[in-house]
Image 1 (cartoon, rainbow, N blue to C red):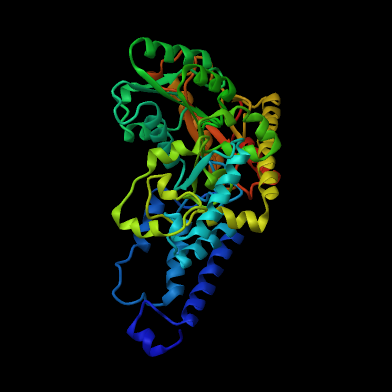
Image 2: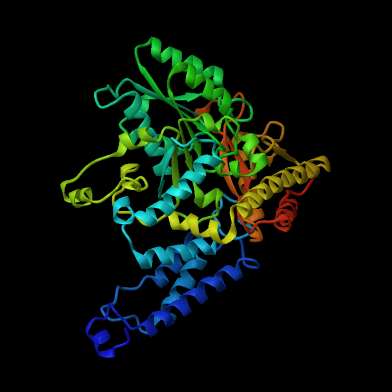
Length: 499
């Protein structure tokens, strides 16, 4: 449509030439930002200075187009992007990085432009089939059979919530007493588990914290004892949530042993694999995650382990009909679809999760898999495991040379936690202050960006606080050996002077 008069009468329908100019400008901006990641800082401007930028770019919504057009818009976006963390950057080793492959960004452009309704398979049977193909592939990679089912959601918070709801419906049901329903996880479980249980109606008092070992892994013996004690007290144990890689330290719970406990006790076994579950795609990761295939459900975050943009999570359930029973609902206004032949359609996402209106998330994963191939993802994940072990080995070499450092535990997956050693008679507050300053010195160079957590320490009650601990998480697709070497160099530079 290139009619100038029509464009003037209908300003939301500009001519193709306008769309093409916007596309060239914005895609050029996006590619420039990606190119800049290689040599740019590992962290942008945050804190008070970042809020100053926020004030500067915050403009009233105009009645007419912004003066300066798309170039003025890009200038505002460029400023705003500088005032942020940089998760797709190669030196970003904080929290759990997210790369955002460009192929997935293109998928968002295509899916947003097509704007087909993919909540109900009957409304877009072929597009929903592509999404179902991706979910079936993920299920097979995790060791599930043909009966499995799953749904793509906004992230693992929603995936974990969906798992809790499915377990609740199967083992407690509509007529059950949620005041007696009990769930189990370790102290290292992600905080979204507590939120999911609360939203599902499980009282906070009914969430049990299972003991962990010295490497922060859930103790199967303590779990079995806790379940037995609750059952003897007349309660209803219904759910165990294990971690396939904790956020704090990357700890990998003993999945096979926990699966055995759950099978013997008749409770739902869910694995929160948001961070580490995707490592099942590579050979070493599959070996480490042995037992995950026995889980009743698995939460994954493709925007972490599969390098996609934020907003891409997945819930897989070994017995797919259970997922559907927990989420199916009907509405009279959908009756027109009942007249269609629906015998061969893929499962409808709206019958497997909480959303009706939703984006076509499947294209975010389907397109990169088609353009890059699955082997590229397997190789990248294997590389991240190797890099974490390289970092741990180089850190150990620093310690051997006298650096006052201690590793909390060898890496299970691709996260390494470490801190300065505690001095004799040093208070916990002073020790934590030294580690806080140490982290600030590392990040001040802006070549790498690390984050921290607080971990319990022996002989110190939880209420008295834990140890400030630095952590490196290697999960960026653009992070390679030279960036791990840079991280070691920055740590060595930031070490306190001896003496």
